[in-house]
Image (cartoon, rainbow, N blue to C red; front, side, top):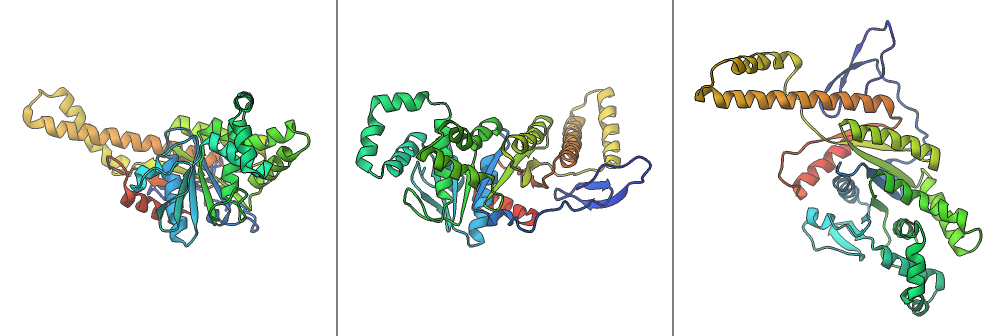
Length: 352
């Protein structure tokens, strides 16, 4: 991790970043962290969020695998009825029920409608009354019209999974990891309890909403992990997310994970002869015997430029973000299987 250079100060070799990139800068001051804040996997809840398409589910699954292998009974919670984990682990889809993915590791896919029914059963203390009310057309109409109710019952289900005493029954877990919605929707979900507590001035809705909100804001119990790519837009969203979490929720990002980082195969000096070959090939007559070599050189240079762009965005993220930044490598596989997930989990273990 490199700091910004002050004018007139010579750069010093800091070392290698977790992705293998050579970094120059001043030896960084360790960012102070309260000893009262537990390590990431010692919280009760880890919220994994970030821009859509950056690999949030993969990182959530790798964290879950790491926690489970450390002896923690862990559940990964998908929201909005997503079912991606079953494919990663090669098991049947779990739906709203808890399903084992691996030893010590379970998954749940939250169905907001079923989460509403569970909430009604808890509030009314009667499955019969909850069924009658939940099945009424008036209640369905009102609940569908209530803004943010789906987010509230979803985060309520996630909160329940993270409790040592479950309100709605079911297994007790040491750690709950939620594969949260993309950045904007993720903030809306985290903000839903405080929003409803402000609307419902008295009564059980307000009491439980305040309880959930306090749990989410407590860094001893809840951690936030944001996933990004080493590209301009995901980096921008990550920096904006840190600002919004601080200003709107008084929450902080505990760790940023930059996914799919390419290896640096050539130094700048090593790339110069390749550029010369590419330029020579561009002005030379096309010959079949050169075609394969030229294509390989162009591909190598294109990847080198991509790596340079990624390193630039990584430096920008590390300069702008208060939270520490870890990296995960790009895996040259058509699709991820358990073997690749295990590799990512071990990389995360070293980074955390």
